[in-house]
Structure formats: structure tokens, C-alpha cells
Length: 79
Image 1 (cartoon, rainbow, N blue to C red):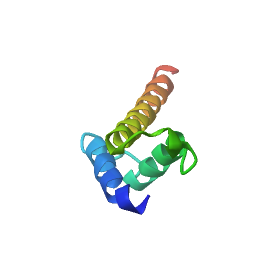
Image 2 (image 1 turned 30 degrees about the vertical axis):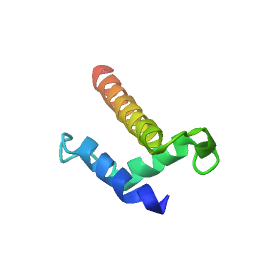
Image 3 (image 1 turned 120 degrees about the vertical axis):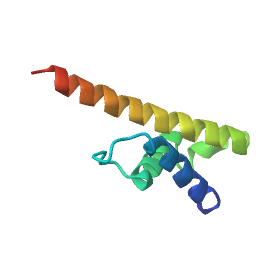
Image 4 (image 1 turned 90 degrees about the vertical axis):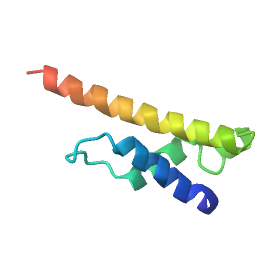
């Protein structure tokens, strides 16, 4: 993970660049959640190359943000 950690944090930072300042999740937390979703060290055997790894990480980050937004919107409409 140390070899790609900086790039993952940069990718997470990109996702947060369009978020409001009140956004509470930090890029580091998003990287860690993406890592867990990919399968950590154990699930990496399914990754065929570097490009595939970053595609999976990017997808995991997008899904996490989508889930957060859906939850946030759902809470707002329950009034």
C-alpha cells in the first residue's frame, strides 16, 4: 500500500474538491474505506494491474460518496 497511498490520497482529494466545506469525511478516511472495500491485501490477488487497481479504488470512492449523498438527501426529505 505505501507505493500507491499518495496517489490514492490525491484521488480522494479530487473527489472532495467539489464538496462543501462542511463535508466531514476526510480524504484519508475515504482512502481507508476504499482499501477495505477492494479487499485490503487479501483481495488484491484479483487485481490484474495498476490501472485495474486504480479503477477499483476510484469506483469504491465514487460508490461511498454516492451512498453518503443518498443518505444525506434521504434525511433531508424525511421532515
